[in-house]
Length: 113
Image (cartoon, rainbow, N blue to C red):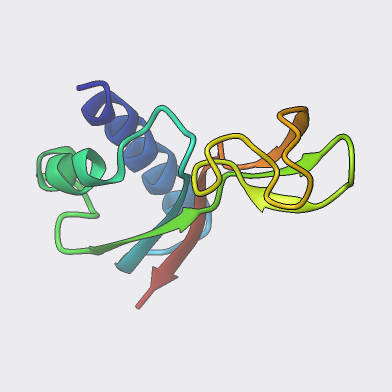
């Protein structure tokens, strides 16, 4: 599970940001994870308590927003969800597409008290 290492890096990044901006207490950390990302949201949720233990984020809430894995058909230009439509354009049936989004892993928001 590489999510623990990722979350430890996220915690360090957020702590550094907080210190640089005079933030002493954080209520909520909001992450965005693309549904095609190699990061598994339920594993992030599961390892979050271990990653924040003993840090300034120890008492924070974690919110995860899942970003869709959307692509655009090279043939008809329709935008569709890659997973939902199993890699085939629902409009024309083409399997030629370009990925638009869904591999992201972002710190979206740090909600300070």
